[in-house]
Image (cartoon, rainbow, N blue to C red):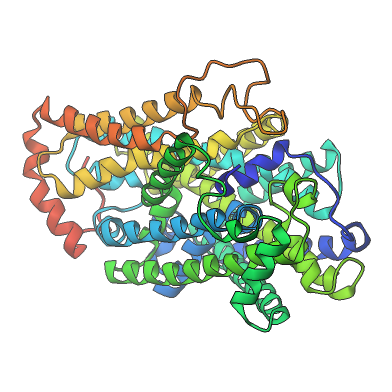
Length: 562
């Protein structure tokens, strides 16, 4: 199973107690509580400055490029990235490292095509940029549906994985512990969003980024020290200990098995690289800085931070392969690689039963918990903002809602979305919800990105084209995923079920697990088709104004026309 889906996969992965974890569970719990205390404190401090809609949605556009770069990194690097990629490298070698490359390359698309222009031409949400030169209600409705879809798909997968992940890192089993974790994570994310708004959420993400980078640098340095800071020796030991020899360091171990697996990886890569520039919770971060230049600077900082992190996953992954048992019957393999980083930290600190091992294991567990909190807070804020600003203020109230009404609606929406996520995540733990992550990236790349690119660079693009692009990409991605092996008909090599539906139920006809290779072109096609089949002189007339605004930032903070 791919690293991208690692957190969600935990919901159905047999969990085993991490060696030594039960002996030092108190230390882990103390660090968990310390993370919660720090994030609650910064949220309360940030909430004192929330006075306007701009404060709640965009943090008053007050963050520097470095601060926003840290927050973007915190928002982007999920538990699936932190634990999943290290595990994928530990189990699949070179092929696992391809995920690190994909996650990093994705930011070049955001930097070159989206960041500066989106900051200049939008205000609070993705729909602000799309609706600027088009009819407000249909475009905002379509953008809000797509935003809510992507955010909730991703949020539910994170919530389901959170319960199993924390239970795994604490070394406990049973549904009660996982259910309580889900409720705790849900309650905290509701608090961050309703009380702190964008400022509180941003500081939570910055705290998470600092903890994640600090913990990763520490473990990376210790692992490299064990091999005399000789990367060749580390790779050689990993290849030898993996039992796969030189093939472990060469492409094809995981994705060269068949033509379908190669195409599936290409499809996943397209969704990952292009979907990042269309993820709503990433896009709204560009509105939290004062100028387009700072937005560009923040993305450059994010690329540096994220790039450094994914390079370190190379050491974590191959270090786990070199120092841990990663065979078919190992705990690393049994959890799809998710415990590779925590167990590596324990081994690097002195092994099970040692004080150093216990401290590093607890530290990495706390970092993973902070990672979950930051990502779910960002997703909840995005969903609440889109509903309040786009659906409530501009569709239902036709632009006549006051700032106070809008912010109150956003807080209510955050509470409702959090409650629904908790209610859905608890029973969904027994299901394989990995497809939700695939769906989130596919929809972002298939529905959001085509509309953004067309709107910025094609003068003739109009309301019908935007609506067709977003709904066409959304529906095509959902339909293809529904009829793919991740929903029905997938049997794992060990004979277990790898799909949402139980064994024996198979209505799949689309052979790929990720629909990006087909749904992304369809999103662009529907956008083109809808545009050429209709005329919208007003949209064309306002293109020059949008172009000037996207390049200069003139009027970016003004209310969009109604």
